[in-house]
Image (tube, rainbow, N blue to C red):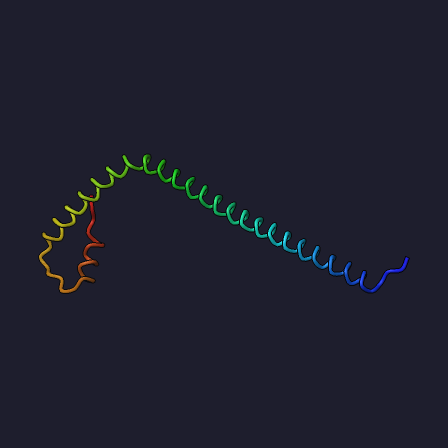
Amino acid sequence: MLITLQDLLLQTSRIREKSAESSHIVHEITKDIQLLDLAKRNLVASVNSLRRFGMMGVWALRIRPSMAILTVLVVNGVSQLEDQLAATPRKYPDISQSLAVCCYVTID
């Protein structure tokens, strides 16, 4: 059995074609895997965000009664602060001195 040079060249060209096809298939598979991996990461990030958003909703419902109380305290405190500043006979020429007074005024 004698193999000619032409047969060898034909076999090598077939092997190259099969190799190119295999390389293309592998490239397509890895590209699909990368896309699936990206989709998985995006899905995990979305689920985590939705979970955190749900937790924020639960905490917002728990905090709402406290916020009403806090709002009343702040409004009362601001009005008391205004009264105390209005009762102060001095005029403060710049904002830093006014802030210094605000820091030392007590709110009951």
